Length: 134
Image (cartoon, rainbow, N blue to C red; front, top):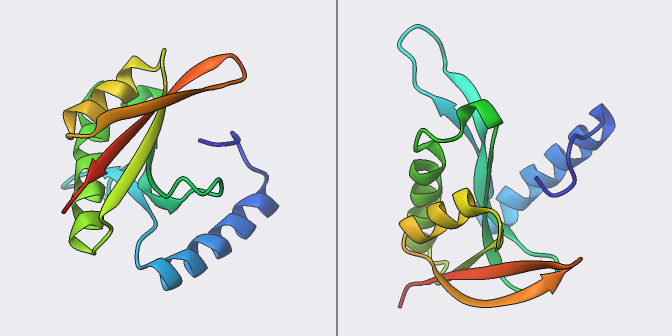
C-alpha cells in the first residue's frame, strides 16, 4: 500500500511514525487478523485512518494479502475503522480508489461511502469517496 514492500530500515522508521501518529491523532493503522481458536490469528493485512499528506483530509486505507481477499475481511475491517473514527469525532473521512479497482470500490460503497469526485493521476481515474457524520 502506497509504495510497496519496505526495507527493514523503512519499516522501523514507519513504525516509529505510526506510534507518534497514534499519540497525536488517537487513531491510526490496525492489523487485520483472522480469528482462530488455536492461534493468535494469521495476519491478513492492514486498515486504518491517516491524515493525507496532500491536505485532502483523513482517509480510510486498507490492504490485504491477495490470498485473503474475497472473504469479506476488508469490508468488516474497513467498516469497523470507519465507525470508530466517527465515534472518536472524525466527522469527515475520505477514501481513494482507482476506477479499475472494483474490489476496493465495492468495499467502500458497501460500507456507506459515496463517490463525491474524481481526479486523474498518471493517466488513471481516481475516485474520491466520502463519509460524513453530522
